[in-house]
Length: 428
Ligand code: AMP
Ligand code: GLY
Image (tube, rainbow, N blue to C red; front, side, top):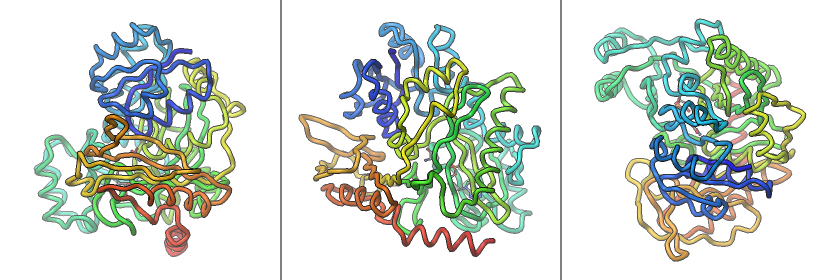
């Protein structure tokens, strides 16, 4: 098959690599900047903004691709799938209307409400800063403040933790659009991703991402600093009952979108907070998570090209999707100062990375030399029979990188996992 992969980050490198395991699949890529990993795999590359639909359309037609796999959310919001499908190109990714589950947080909560979907926190939608501010002024206790639209994963502020009331008000004033104010959920976060064909859903192993910039979950939120998954595809602070509830929420969501005439096709990403009362939905994303895609796609034993065909035809089946029973630990290398003032343009050198998989992200390669750009640089994924072995492998490679970069040492360590488990015990 010929397939267009849209996007140029670590996530899309993982998608391209998984597709390329089928030697008959020809990959074409559209990305804003050269990802050296994707360029090496792809048969052709077009550099353009991932939201430049006319240019992407003309490249798709030039290359004659039959399929497209949309990595990031911005092109989904721009309606890329509607356009590609009207030209007869089948997509892994929802239409613009179905992608609102991610691109419009007010729509997402409203849909959960209307269809009585479990796991929706208490929330209020405000279309003007003045109304939100008056609510904040009268509110006792904590709140999660979320811009309605896309923010690259960096838009949420927690009043009561990251900001006080004055900070919350200043933040709302600084935003251009509306906000959703939500009950602050307390618990442990986990990610459940699934392949969806419009009706059926096939889940992938659970992953835990780390949004905060520094060890110990300190510092500002980032796009995600790294993530891990366990050999049994579960997480030790998520019970079987919690898992069932989370999966049922995902099923209900797919069914609700189908009922409203916007069937969901692609990757559905559920971010959950496992609270004292079970899993609650922090948000849905209309695509793979980055870094979480690297964990699950590194374990995928089945042919992703085949899964693409089944997603687009509506013939997905769990029998055709299998993952290795191994642990993964993904560590992102980022420029010093990321996310607030990233040191871009600095040379970096990769040391030995025997064992761990290397995924490129926002990095420049010139004459065989790598240098940082302003976002996450590259990631290592360690794989092993235990979490400890996977972590060692990722750590060995990450610690061998030279340059003005950093990463989180604690991701996938026993100490961190024990803290998560203890936190969950304390809550219940
Ligand atoms: P998001 O941009 O929706 O992925 O949110 C970023 C981070 O904000 C999440 O990973 C959570 O840690 C936090 N967050 C979002 N919503 C809530 C909530 N209702 N309660 C507590 N934390 C939240
Ligand atoms: N890792 C979080 C995200 O992709 O949104």
